[in-house]
Image (cartoon, rainbow, N blue to C red; front, side, top):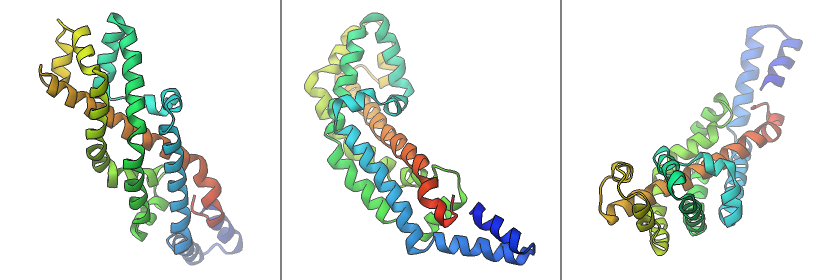
Length: 226
C-alpha cells in the first residue's frame, strides 16, 4: 500500500487523489485476487505445519512448537527435571508421537476455515499487523481443534502410561494434583492430554504465523497490501 501512497503523492498532492488511491488499493486487496493470495499464504503455512507434525523429529526440534508449551505443563516439567529428567524426555517424545495422529484431524478443519474467509476478514487483515491472517484463523478454529484432537491425544498418551509415570515421580508433591485438578488418574490423564493438545494446536499456529510473516511482504507487496 505504501508504494501506491508514494506514487499518488508524487503525481498529485491533493487529499482526494490519495483517498481514491487508498480505496483502489483496498478494493484490489479484497477482490478475488487479493483473497486468493491470502489463502495461498495461509494454506502454505498449514502445509508447512503438517509436514513438521508428520515427522516426530521435526516436531521435537521445532522451537515454535516448544514455545507453545502451556505454562502449567512447563511447571510440571521444571519440577520433573529435578527429580527424573528422563521422564520429561519421554513425555516430549510421546506428545510428538501423538501429534502425528492429529494431522489428518487438524488439516481439513484449517483448510475449510481458510476457504471460508470473507471480504470482511481480508479487510481486517489488510488493516492489521503482519500475523493478522493467522490470528483470524486461530479465532475461528482454535477451540474446535483442541476439542477435535484431545480424544486422540489422550488415547495415544494412555498407551504409554505417561500419566502414571508422572504421578509416581511426583508422589508427595502437591504440584501435580493442583495443576491437573485432582488425584484420580482419569482426571490427570484428561488434564495432561488437554495441555498436550493445546501445545499441539498453538504450536501449529506459531508455525503458520511465522510462515505468514515470512511470505506476506513478497506475495502481497505487488498489490500494495503490505
